Length: 449
Image (cartoon, rainbow, N blue to C red; front, side):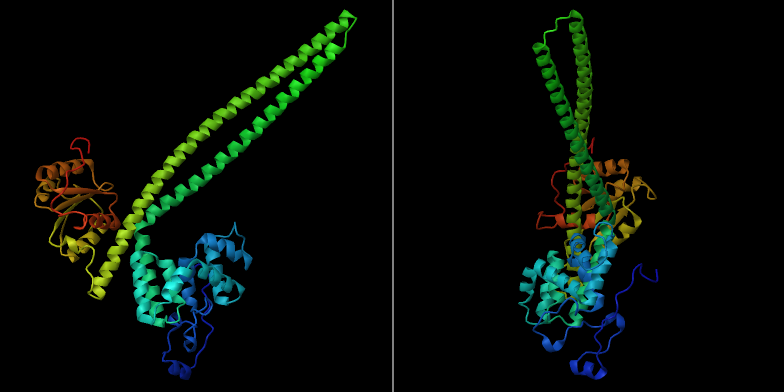
């Protein structure tokens, strides 16, 4: 796609001549890399949101402010409707407010300062750009990125190279995490929408049930009052004519029959409403169970994301500075057999393990490789891994039996993704287990799995 689906932000309005650029020590840059509008002459003051380069506003607002917060703030300064506007329109309008530098930009800056006051105080301790980058690297390792990103971008010592480094690392991290968990996020969003819809339905049913109960009680009270009035009237009057007495008795009987019919109607409605309430309670219970399962899945996905992020940061540190060992280095010299999976993720896993000094053997479970080779590939392995969503039951039962016979450590993976494998390897680190080749007793049953 050659053009984005929305209008691009206008270029920064700060213009410097070549002589002024030479005086500040900066060089002319391309429009896509125009430096921030913070003046270097006043280095002791934090930069305002409107003073930053227009190319940075999108990443700052998208990372440091949630859509819920923007929906409360942006409509105050624009003509957007808080309920009907899409997330993209809200985000785009917030970026435009930041670029315009008016009251909207000041409000956005104030909200960001209030949310991340602790991070700003922590980054104020930096004496130069080197200390600033150290604090940013610590935030990347801990995963607390939004507060650190805002504190770094507005720091007095944040130079062009510092901001470009933080922007690039944040950009690539969003690609990495999004590619690993896009399917899980789609399922979670669908379940959250279904949860909200069912909650609204239960509330409507409860309100309707209360209205029906109130109408029934009011009707019963009115009928009882009418019966009491008729009874009192009958006791006060003493008809002398037997025909008048019979007519009055017949009228009272008709009214009593009508009252009984109304009571029966309201009773049937009440019983139907109670039945619907029981059904809605069952649906709510099933919804809570589904929510608990979803939260458990989200927790597992988050742990996989954290493990993948730590491995990525460690690998970047290991290749960039040589001062830190990568998270997968403890598989050096180990032979790992991977059964099942997908060709694309298997190739990525092979590169990761071989880069760490390990031996990675793949068997597709019988799709193209013969199943008879599976038993021959397992002996001599230090660990056997298989994703439960990309392997057939026959191959899984075979490798369990062979692993139990040869005392080989074997582990199932939730999915065939790179994140699931990295999270498993992190759990098998020597700090958590004495030796990778000395497995604990298996929790799998050879007959039932």
